[in-house]
Image (cartoon, rainbow, N blue to C red; front, side):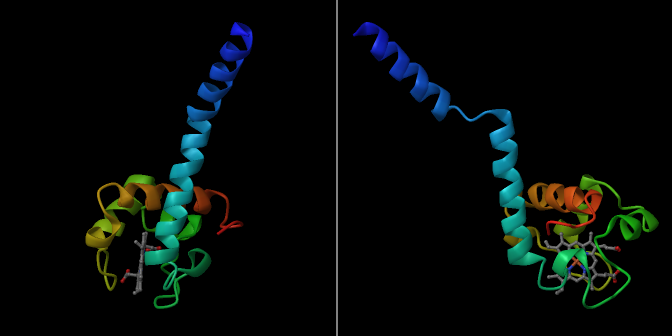
Length: 113
Ligand code: HEC
């Protein structure tokens, strides 16, 4: 009987404590949701419907020296050129989450975004 209790408790604690991989998955899906809500309107699949050259694709980011999560997060917060900032709607860590997701997609050529 005791053994069963131990097994049950162990199983529950294994399921309840998310692994780092699961946490990363969670934050990346949050970034994806933020992107869909606030960025995808003008940047569908990492493109740019307003200024065609200013995309979120790796080549464009490199060309403009913004090929990093931090540089993208800064633009998400404060905007750039014709684009306004989204600090107010992204919330406390939303800029980092959405930038992390964008940076991942850029490195994967936006095949999933
Ligand atoms: C209303 C349309 C619009 C929305 C919404 C929008 N952007 Fe932009 N974005 C632009 C435009 C226009 C530019 C080009 C700005 C310029 O250089 O004049 C741009 C440029 C960028 C760039 C630089 C790309 C490059 O190649 O130079 C990044 C990074 C970026 N946006 C990220 C974001 C993120 C992150 C969000 C969501 C939080 C977002 N944008 C939402 C219109 C938008």
